[in-house]
Length: 374
Figure 1 (cartoon, rainbow, N blue to C red):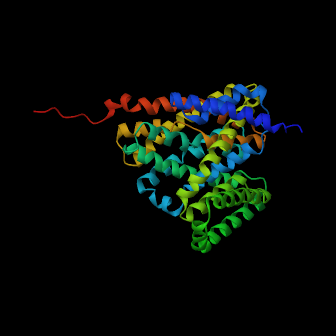
Figure 2 (figure 1 turned 120 degrees about the horizontal axis):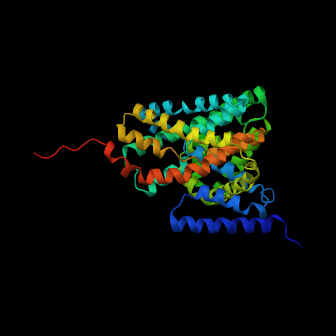
C-alpha cells in the first residue's frame, strides 16, 4: 500500500515549520512572517494543494480565535479612550479605498486594499508588547484596545466583501448571523452547563465540527466562510468558557495556522512574478498613512506627544488579516492587492519589531523635561 502524496508533503512541511520554530525560540523573532518566508524558500518543493485542507482549516481556526476575543465582557472592556482612538484609526480604511480607486481598482478590490492599508497585526504586536514587558505602558493599553476595534471592523468588511453571493447572499448571511446570535443568547446558559460537564475531547471535537460546519454553511449562502468561523468564536466566548476552549484549541490552531502561512508563502512566489513598482509604492504609502493617522488616533486617546509617536510605531506590523485579504483579492482576480498585502507583511513585521524594540529609547527627548533640583 502506497502512502498518499499528502503524507510525505505534510511531513516535509512540518519539518520546515519545526526548523523555523527553532529559529524563533533561539532569536525571539515573530513566528508568522518567518513561516511566510519559509514558504517562499521551499516553494519549488511543496505544492500547497497537496496538504489541503489543513491550510484552509488554519485560516478558519485563526478567525475562530479572533472571534473568541469578542465576548460581551471584552467589548465592555474597550475604554472610551480606545474607542475614540479606534474611530480615528478607522480613517485608514477609506484612505486605502481611495488609493485603490485612484490606481484603477474596482470597488471590491479597492475595499480589500483599504483593509490591507488599515489592518495591523494583533498577533505580532501583542506578542512583542508582552515579550518586551511593555504591557503596563499607557500607549500599550491604547494600542491593544485599538487592535480589538480593528479586528471587529475588518470582520464586518469580510462579511460584506469576502463572499460570492452578491446582495442576496449578504442578506441571507446577515439573517443567519442574527439567528446564530439569538440562538446563542437563548441557549447560552444550558449550553454552558452542558459543556462544563463534558470531557475535553467532546468539547474539542464539537467545537471544531461547529466552527467548520458554520463556515461551510456561510460559504454555501455566498457569504465569506471566514465570518462564519469568526462568529463561532464569538458564540464560544459568550458561553463563558473562553479559557478552556482556548487551552483545548491552541495546539491544533497553532499547527494549522503555521501551515496556512507556509502555504501562503509558497503561493506568493507566483504572486511576486513581475512585481510592479506600483505595488512597492502602495506598500510605502500604506506604512506612511498608518503612521500619520495613528499619531492623531493616539491624540484622540489623550496621550502626549511622545506616547503618540510610540503608538504609531507600535501599529506598524501587519500580519494575519492582511494575508486573508490578499487571498480574497487573488480569488477576486486582483493580483496587485495580493502583492501589496504579502509584501507589506514581509516589510512591516521586521521593521515594526525594530521600531517597537528601540522606539522608547529613540523618543525620550519628546517626553516632558524634568525640572532641575534647586
